[in-house]
Image (cartoon, rainbow, N blue to C red):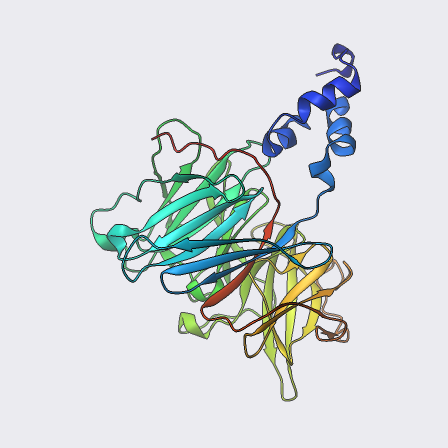
Length: 373
């Protein structure tokens, strides 16, 4: 589409674009150079840095806390209560200010909800279709495709599912809400719950249960592929022996791998830099000293910060880091580990119980896409 066909003054175009949801505005960058320039330079969301969102899953009441990106002070706090006796709310993921929650009671009462916590709007999704209660067991991922503008929730089956090679995908705002089957032999290897799941740049990623393989579900064509993980990730006999985590590193797929040594624990962070599924290209981005704290996941980086938690679980820190790291050729250069305790800022200091994870968050008033119910 040629730019000459647009005679709308730039100021008027910006006013129109500002009335669009953030996700739609991103897609409209593809229309032409004029629109791309106006969106990149004149709309505030392009300049907004993500905030740190911590989510603590505990008992029937879970809590999300958002910390300001400038001063580290608390900006928002929301509490989520399970609708079932003995249930717990877990965070599936965040995308463009929307958050996806999983209320886990027994398998028949498992509920997925997508909500905008600022507006309070929420959409409950129908349950995954299953012939028995084991069919709904598994893990869930939440992702957004920047080209199609679609939000999707992904269900990866567990080893107990009747069909381990069948996953499910639900698209929000796509007519009547329904889960579509994704049949792939690659699914049969199942997932490793100890390594997590993360949605990044139009795909959802997780590790297989025993081998050094990363699974990827493309949110555009819903095809499943797998490829080799980074150095340091090795096959394990039992899933719980895997200590690495898939994570988001500056909005790219990363893997954090603890390396246990005599004096201290070092966490190597590898980032996928392209290549093919047969020969993926990984590079070591960070080498983090983990003597006094635990590196957080599934979102490792938050703008210029890396977040960690004290060993006793009572304090959370953020530390500025540069965007450097290992070479792009994937060679481990054995750089001196970066000590996360040096220059770290305490942003949370309280006794907490439950599972604490960190996510990237952008405050928005964007509506939640309908589930079509």
